[in-house]
Image (cartoon, one colour):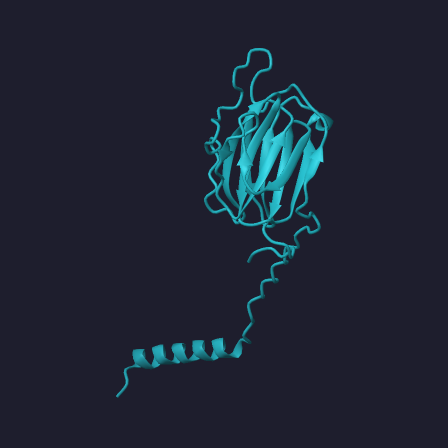
Length: 196
């Protein structure tokens, strides 16, 4: 025979089950689908250049990763946007200005980046950017980049600074002049689709 306590506990559990079953199930709200990133297109892979010059010196080169492109920034503090001349183009091999020495750069393609600003103080000749010809750019780590493979310092000669940027392939790129810096973006692909 069932004990009164057992009967009471069974009734409470049965009642709780019936109440729970009577409450309609509410679906959890669905998360909105992530908006697809649309990448800029139309940059092209042809040579890009602006004729201008500054006596302000290159102080740093840094890189960054973005959804649609990898970015290199050449810092030239004090230089006005219109004074930052440049030439950026794909080359088969990187040759150092002045000596003509071949600077090996890894990657499927090489962008030669020339900035019309010295990497030294024009008055004293002292280096303002601690890089050595033929070596990787100091402080630049390209681990995990989708497009960039290598970044080399070629030298600074007669007021121009020359860099080699190794990329995965001949991909579209753009160059932007900003106050105090030159920005080079290289797209991850030709289609304008961001990676997932």
